[in-house]
Image 1 (spheres, rainbow, N blue to C red):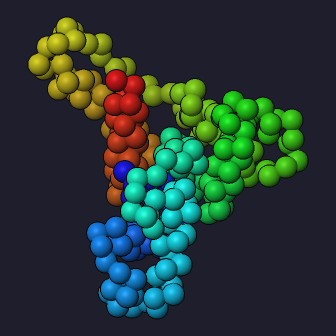
Image 2 (image 1 turned 90 degrees about the vertical axis):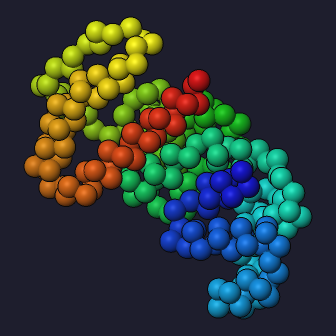
Length: 212
């Protein structure tokens, strides 16, 4: 849980994986000197990384105790903020601004209201708040795409039938193939399309698991 919070707090910095690995080593008992030698860094630099990680999650790394921080809880609650910021090129530090504003506002509703009343302040944070607000309400933050012309067959089995999941795959496959074809026609590569679909499916599965 500690490392998950840290990864969420750190965002999509190019060095996030390496820094999380260093923190993981520290939590497993390695000293600053051990980590410095292992990662070809100075002990001072290793200490700076560990101390920054400790601040990001609200404490607990240096003492090796599980932290309880409203700031880190906010960050874990909105893991898709990083993807939204990266997708919309809102800047690598924008998520940190967003979470700082969110913590001060106390809730997403208050943050959105604040940004509406102060439209000239922090335009990227305002835009990020808008995107997250849409996502919270199940609306796509991206421009609407042309509706698929492929009809999706309705389920013919009861909810507890063992073949219902397989039948759902059969029902969705034509629409999925059409979506992939349209994406390819727009210039996306097959690898990019497959990875995007995989990520979107994983995000949807995570949301469903949280609801239940």
